[in-house]
Image (tube, rainbow, N blue to C red; front, side, top):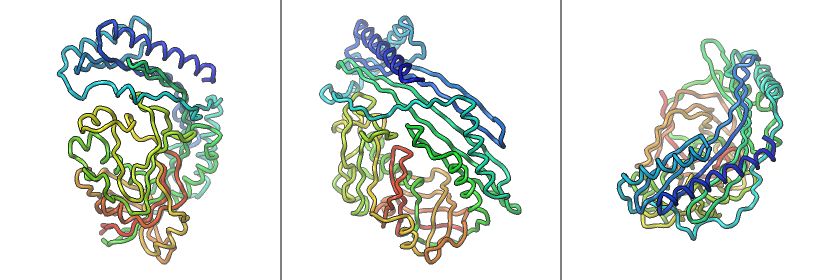
Length: 446
């Protein structure tokens, strides 16, 4: 979509949301909220230098929630004609009348609504047609396949573009929206040697297509990563230092966010329950929420309830400062919304001013994890156990690739055992972290 088409779609969504709120008021709802979105894009996958899939997508939707006192009802539709919107609101109202009362139900507090809407540069049109996307994906996969003759197969290279807009409004008088875009390129290949086969991948994602890594580079990196895993060995069980490269490190901090969310806290299903003011990370670690970063993947001026987002330190010098709350669970817990309906908006993990090479040198002998498998994380106890593959390091140099091992520990110990965080920050998601060196974890092998 061009910028003009996106602006026209946003105007149409605003009219739809406003109409839904008007209908809710006419039907007697004490409060109401509605969100609408529109998106369009293209996805192309090339496999073995042939077109595997070519997809255009175009979708829209409207979600409506109404409140009759403390009773709540919700309904949704993909048809934005006025008559259908009226039917959708009526359905939500009908459901609300039969719902049980919930003392925490309702809109976020009116005084918390955003009033300033800075341009966060989230929308960038990509004039990419199907032919150009095919050429780009073909170039990417060709670069991967040319790395080494042992690369025997491919899962394909995929180019994707998505452009759209979203609007949110409620009966506090709040009505706002913004356009956004997300473009990507990825490649995954397989290499074989003897009876062994390995797979790896690489990808790039950005709001501005001009910030995507070159297709040839993505393919080459995917190929090199795959070949580098050939000859993998097993290890016997040991306790060892571990490095999580930047693209995996964000998952470590994601477990903390899950434990700090309102739902987990209310259910008392969190290993970080009642920990505000307690040192939960190593003292040189700060986790900051930065919702207004230009072109950030998690950037927004308001959360999905219209609450203004703000910069804050979630963890400062290792000490937990607060939780991650939307209005519903904030009320359940007797606290206030932190503007996190929909999640955290750009969590930035502080670094310790060292390079990735410095991490490997400091570790000396230990394990670099490059792939994690399984979901073995207990959010109640913090116990951590996941299948892994990677590289064994001796005297600061990679000795050989490793597979079929398990990394284990407890997240509380892991967080406090972070020795260094490198400056190679990965900005491809809503959590931004560099590579992490942990003092010790259990590596279970043969």
